[in-house]
Image (cartoon, rainbow, N blue to C red; front, side, top):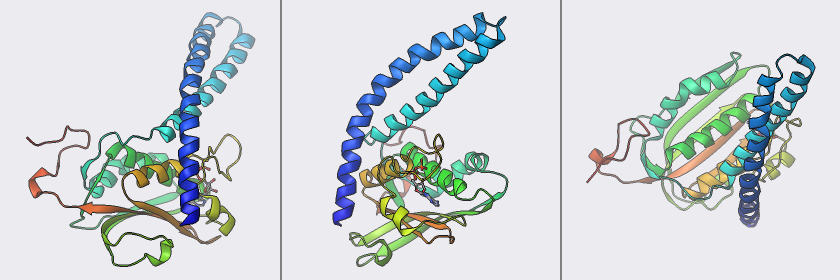
Amino acid sequence: LQSQLAVAQKVEAVGGLAGGIAHDFNNLLTAILAPAELLIETLSGDPESVRDVTEIRDAARRAADLTRQLLAFSRRQVLQPRPLNLNEVVTGMTGMLRRLISEDIDLHTSCAGELGTVRADPSQLEQVLVNLVVNARDAMPNGGRLTIETANVEIDKTHASTQLLVTPGSYVMLSVHDTGAGMSPETQARLWEPFFTTKPKGKGTGLGLSTAYGIVKQSGGYIWAESEPGQGATFKILLPRVEVAADSLATAPLDAPPRGT
Ligand code: ADP
């Protein structure tokens, strides 16, 4: 519990700082990117200069990608929480996720029937799922099996495997399992820290899981990992189940405005 608290405070502090910097940085990057694009066109007769300016543009683009992630990470407010069926989120994203992973990875989804409703922001949950799937992909450079699962879960006492005090109640579980490299206990201890990454420079930002952590916490849920080196990894999310009148649950596309009076 103590370490969870420390992580939460760290995520909070870095989030505030990073958001401010990222915002100003983004404006500066636009001032580099726009003229660089222009120069590439006007210099088209001079291949050497075009190559140099292209390098500037590509570096600025990478920096812009990083600031976008920082902004997403620091965006503390839940944008639009609404009653949600996680099966719809998963099914709606399967095509996109398949394109995100390599052909050597088999993607399986296992959606529970009669899945309970949760209350969350769909686009933020999509971001969480993308982050988990990208990590699973990166853990399986030689291919493997990726399984996304949903289930109804009842918690009646401390959830043994999370070592967290999960408030007893009804939850919906979303889990992402891979058959990849797995994680050492040292890595698992630092997993949720902002900027913690074991990926090579330029590949990882160390913000994927801390972002996921922040979003899940804001939605009143829990997230944890189960893994052993060489044995793959499973990331599990519990979101509290909410009661909704059957006819108020939107079966319309995810970004349709909420129905109701
Ligand atoms: P990043 O992906 O940019 O490194 P994350 O916060 O998403 O940042 O992940 C932090 C670290 O956690 C990764 O660098 C990796 O060491 C470890 N990790 C996360 N997911 C997995 C996984 N599915 N299998 C093995 N290691 C993982």
